[in-house]
Length: 342
Image (cartoon, rainbow, N blue to C red; front, side, top):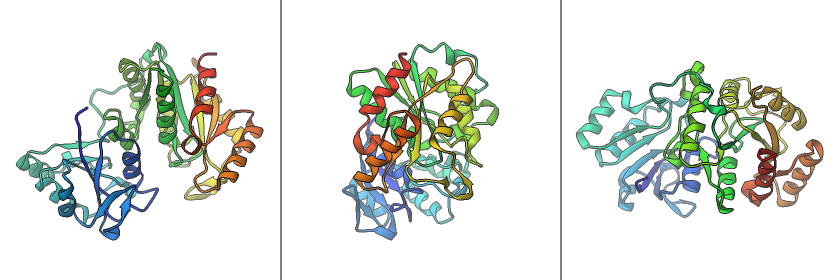
């Protein structure tokens, strides 16, 4: 993996934990440094000690070589004002990495400008050619496979997978994080954004991902989850991952205190115990997966309330529960290893 120096484009969203999650994930976990963040609404501030600047031109003073689209937008499309940011980045000689559903390489004007300035456009969500349905190779992979699933979207499935992978590698295990979304791909440098794959080939893409993770030396694979089985809009991607990656174990992610699907107030969430049972029943019949533990997102709680929430989740489900981002991944990793080696 070649070294990069990121200028993250986060216009209007650098302070938004949801729509700016690509920026936040890359800053937290990428092996490549972010040297500046572009957001004219917060120019002069910092994020994690990284300067926020008002324009691409100002960011160039920090010596970036790659501009990263660090935001999610409604429908995955670029707002009109963003074309100027993209063109300015390309004209400055920066490669561009883009995780939105709108592919820059399909845009004639942007592509011609990139050729003119000798820069590369990387559409992180663009599926690779040749995807098809599963072949059964997912069941022949020698690695132990762990998939993060969730009660909702945007609650930390990627973060939990990365934290567990880090904890495993810290113990000397041959572990690999398997990225299935644009932010994970930006962090790891490989993967498939499964939400952009033709529905019939989604499970096949998930199979390819675990096969590739094993080929990269993983004896334990932590697969980044997407969507949620109980989500009225994004359940399909979860089922495709669940069957295509054929996990041995699941880690159920949940935002502590959440009672309804975010953005869908008429859709109440099942209990944690019901969610455990649902995911185990929905797993691939040839490889029934067990939920090994509950990963709680307790970012909105005090430490005392976070520990109380974990204790309550453990009492309800009989499974280990913890917030691996806040308190470390050791206890959940122990639970996962018990399941995959049982």
